[in-house]
Length: 144
Ligand SMILES: Cc1cc2nc3c(=O)[nH]c(=O)nc-3n(C[C@H](O)[C@H](O)[C@H](O)COP(=O)(O)O)c2cc1C
Image (cartoon, rainbow, N blue to C red; front, side, top):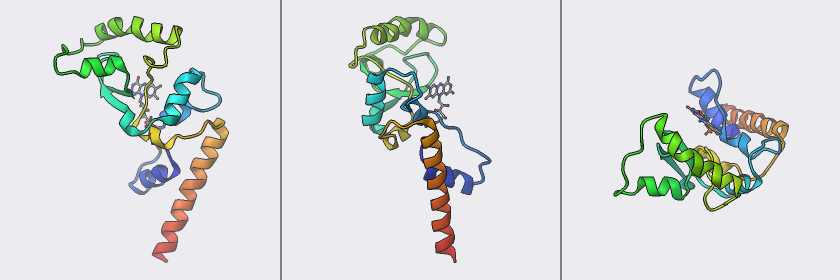
């Protein structure tokens, strides 16, 4: 869930609240490496994949050579948790330590395409609430 329109839609469907994740990764306060932040800001939903290759559990992440190789038809199935993490940990840590932009990855939802600028967390929240309120006002206007 990434935008105020998403928030408004969820509330309209009866949700009491929403769970957000990806949009905070590229906030100014986030300690995610700037290389990854730039990839997140440039990414669309198509740059993500639903993969078990990181931890053995399904998670959506930015595509990287590791996820693509494990998704290949000739690749073996990833191991069950926690063993797959033992396999992937050195790769992930090495990619981060050596700041290999081509190898690094991060958890990211399909809404990553809506995250296009690095803003302070306070601004992210304000923008989301304003957009949700605008969406509700638009809906009320249409119904009136
Ligand atoms: C850095 C990060 C770590 C996450 N770790 C987990 C996790 O351990 N288990 C899980 O079920 N979901 C995890 N998620 C997925 C969040 O539950 C997901 O982001 C949340 O449903 C909100 O969706 P959104 O990221 O599209 O806003 C993670 C997401 C991010 C961004």
